[in-house]
Image (cartoon, rainbow, N blue to C red; front, top):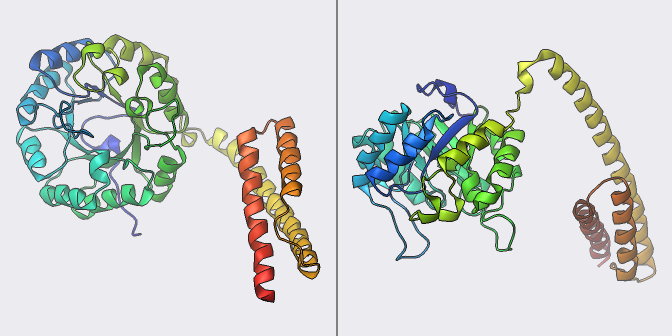
Length: 362
C-alpha cells in the first residue's frame, strides 16, 4: 500500500483541535428542532454540528430522513453556534445536494462503506472538489473494506480524511449495540500515519447509559475526538431515541472527560516510556524463547505418540492442563478469558505440529 499524505484535522481550515467534538441529532426533523438543539449547545465545546438528512434504515417503513429540504436547516445551527456542519452522503445525488447547500464536511456511513460500488460513486462525484470527508467503519469487522474506502477517497483527490469508529455488528447479545473491537481502529491508525479517528459512542452503545464510559475509553486509547448524537427531546426523537442525549447532558459529560496528553508533548515522559518499552521488548523475546522451547517438548511428545500409535488429542490431559494454567494466570491477575484464549492458541498450534508429524509418516 502506497503511503497516503493525509491532511491532519488541525489543517482542515476550521480551527479544529484535538479532541474534535462533533454533536447534533441523529436526524434533522424540523427547523425548530435544529434551532432548539443548537441553542442548547451554545457555549459547549463543539467543533462540528452533525445531522442525518438521508437515513438508510435496515427495514422500510421506519423514518428515513427528511431528505434534501433539510439541508437548509443546518444553516440555522451554523449561525447560532458559529461552527461548520456535516451530513452523511451515500450516493452522487446526495453529494451534489450537500455541496449546493454549502455543507462543510461530509461523512460516508457504515452501510455505504461496506459497498465499494457505492463508495466509488461518492468518490467519482467528489473528483475536483476540495472538501473533508469522514469514513465510518463498515458494519462488519472488515478492516480492508474500511481501508479501501479511505484509499478510494484519496485516489479521487481528497486528502482531508478522517475515520469514524462506530463499532461492529455482533450476533451475540452484549452490553453494546455494536461491539467496539478497539484493536481495529488502532490497527487502522498504524496503517495510515496521521489519520484522525473519531469515536461514535452513540452507535457503539445504542443506549445513553454507557456513552460517557465509552467516550472516556476512546480518549484513553488515543482516538482523536467524539461524534455524539444530541437531541433537545431524546425520548421523542424520530430515530434512535435511546442513544441520544440532551445538550445539558452533553455539556456536563464533556466537562468530566479526562483528555489524555500525547506522549510526544513531553520529552522526559517519552524517555521514561522508551525505557519501559525496552523492558517489554526483552520480556517478549524471553517469552518467545520459552514458547519455542515448549514446542520442542511438544514435538518430542508427538514423536512418542507416533512411535506408540497414540491419538494426537488426549482430552482428559488437555482439560487438566487448561484448568491448572487458567488458575495460575488468575493468581497473577490475568483474566480467565485471556488465559483461555492463550491456552487455546497454544493447544491449536500443538495439535497442528503433531498432526504434521503423523502426516509426514503417512
